[in-house]
Image 1: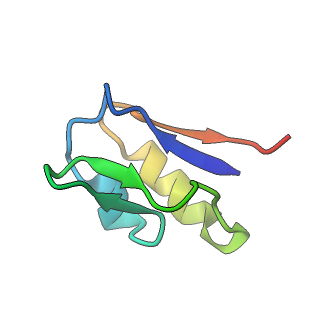
Image 2: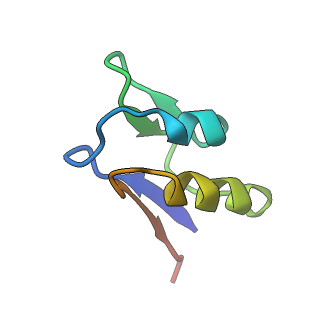
Length: 66
């Protein structure tokens, strides 16, 4: 599973990096960014799903690995 953030939709509320700090961080302007390559370790899938579902702009997407 991978996670990505659409920078066009992100408004910088920070819920992603508050809820899943091991998966997300903020840039210098406070907008969310995916850490590393966006791969979600199995033990962090719950945190990733919670962060995605709490994004007010629906700027994040979970992608299932093929």
